[in-house]
Structures are given as C-alpha cells and as structure tokens.
Length: 77
Image 1 (cartoon, helix red, strand yellow):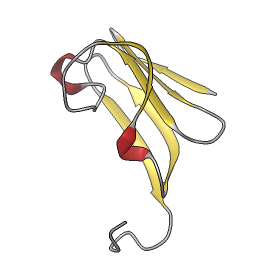
Image 2 (cartoon, one colour):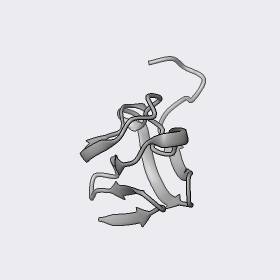
Image 3 (cartoon, rainbow, N blue to C red):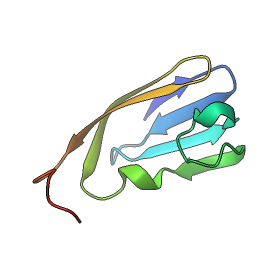
Image 4 (cartoon, rainbow, N blue to C red):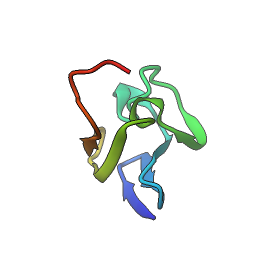
C-alpha cells in the first residue's frame, strides 16, 4: 500500500492499484467533485476499470495522480 498525505486529506493506493481518498475535500483536493469531507477511505470511481494507478502525491490542497489507461484510451467504456 502506498500512502500520500496533504494538509487535511489522505490518498492511498492498494495492492490492486485502486485509489482511495479521505479527509477534507475542500477545494476539490480529493477529486470526487463534491468538495465534502470523507470520514472513511472511499474508493475513487474515476479510476476504476481500465485505469492502473502508478503513483499519487498530495500537496497542501491538491492531489496529483499518475495512472496508466489499459487498452485503447480513445475507445469509450
């Protein structure tokens, strides 16, 4: 498991390369689109399916995710 910590949010990549986020979502730093707090690790729906997380890093109020898209990225799921 890989963990990354921001000022008030955290991100984790599990052994299956799935991304989880929790903490203060203000300013969209968790990337869920709702700017709300997540009290428990929450699976990030955008990165499910054909995306493999390579790395994640958190800043004070932001998160950067590096992911590999499996298959043809131009083909819709």
